[in-house]
Image: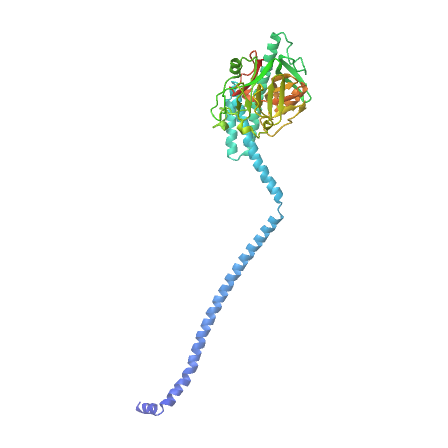
Length: 415
């Protein structure tokens, strides 16, 4: 040991150099090994990342392909057809709603005529339930069924009214109608006759009066504008308090029995000058396109728009309603979009031929059909009035009606 120690100290530099020579390869090998391990790890990471990127690339490729396909489908889709289909669906819903409301109001009209409506109301409720649950096919089918049942009752009422009128005519010594047909409008007084128009044969109850000896007035339950909870009277009450010999229900109004009339019950919006020379609803008819009839001493005028008439109080009576049926002997109304006007029923009117004025009811007709019937009778001008449960005609007593209480009426008074 002493010898080795002596040799170490004598040749220390050489010994250290030899150790260093031996250590360098080992160190280099170790460093290389570490580098190899690091490289292997990085390769594994890169390989893993490559697989992940490949998977993501596949996903993105699928998404891009799907998006492109959707884009191509959208680009090639016929938007006009899509819009038309959507438009058709909206119209269908709207039509079903309007139809249901119209049928409900007709049920209320039947109540006014003292008809049993329990079964009709149950069917209506079932139809509305279907519509609310988007079962349109079932709901529409029930509404069609309901409409048929209401029509059947209306037809039975028309037949009963015709039989009563024929009986009254026979009692007065007039041949029973409608076996006797006449297209000649009466010269004066009341007549119940069968009129052969170009579209069919219709029963008509009609009262005629000469404007030289008759004033045509409009009586109103209110002497001014009224927008809700308005007063109403029966046609018989109007006749009695005005000393009239004939009368008929007046303009469209909002009956208290209609749910849609909440907040405006028994109100009407159109222009009227009543027997007290008071113009009602004047402010909201300055620019109105609603037709108007004006009656004075020996004349009757029918104007296509209320805006064309001033506020002259020198005439006897003014009433606006729609539509204008006849103008100058020509048909002025051939039909419209209102389903109520397009349904069959008893239809009230006021018209004239020269200096003779007429009020009356055409049975089992649409509003458009009334125009053809009155043309066949030879009338020159005519204006549609309210109908349905409001329909009433008086001539020495009720010839039609009495109907519901109404806010205004057209009356014949001796001059």
